[in-house]
Image (tube, rainbow, N blue to C red; front, side, top):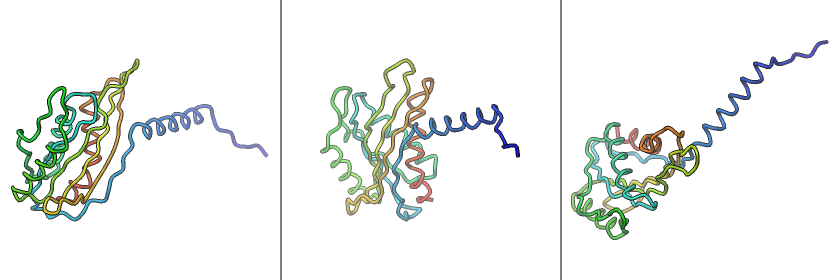
Length: 184
């Protein structure tokens, strides 16, 4: 009895699929919590994102992307904290006191939930390819109690010709997906 053999083309296809699956899996890592039940009419605040990178104003960039991802996915009642509460400059990152002041602002405005986060990576990797890499953590805080009711963390890298902002937008969209579904 003759044993069945795989053609060379079939072996190459399987190998290519395995390499592609491995490459895609290695491009991002996420840990996303289950979103709480959120009232559709809840009022939201966007609070400052702490910048833990060497890239100036990465926190402001991530805030902008998160804000627009939320708005694009139906979170209409969203207010951004006053600019005076974030003193981040090119060389001085935001400090914890500013974050606490922003949460106090949200409380004084009677807002229900506040999204905040940190930027842990925001750069192009050194090397021939110069791949963009982004790392974010996000938290949804119940303003009245100060309790964190949802959290997510993730890191994503892109291809050498991809924009850093595009990688950040993809990561923010993935991390925020449970919240945007819960808020509808």
